[in-house]
Length: 185
Image 1 (tube, rainbow, N blue to C red):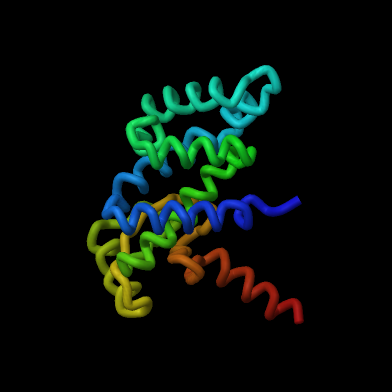
Image 2: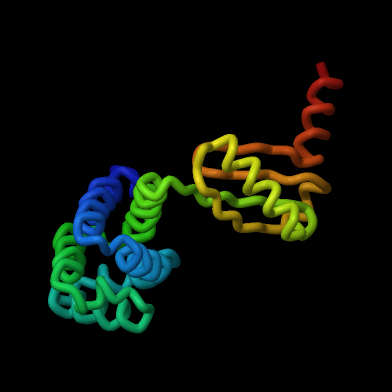
């Protein structure tokens, strides 16, 4: 069976091209993000897989669900969005909406020359530290950087930075593990 990312990639590419041509990247991004969040737990996909539901009932259910979640492009407010949801339902691919949303965001970030970076640290970061990390990453990656932070007390100290495919592990835990490996040799 194919990996969800493999399945999602062409759908994300098609929706991205549609959104880019129509100048609606932000609206589609918001809708796909909301839809992906709804499907992330798997409960919605489980409900939609019930054999007693017709495709029309599935579409009606999703339109209502997406509308309440703010996924306006997919909620029946837009014919292209409705057709996209129909296509996913017909091909039994609605469950890959979280992956479609991820791939769409990556394509959007490429065209906007930006990257989302996640900084995981042992303690909360000050705004000055966040700004310094963003500035350094911007120089290194040549892109605008948006920082989100997470706390993981198991790091002991330092931070782990993930920006696209780049991972910078400057945590004390990684340094101690490296030291332990060196001593073991």
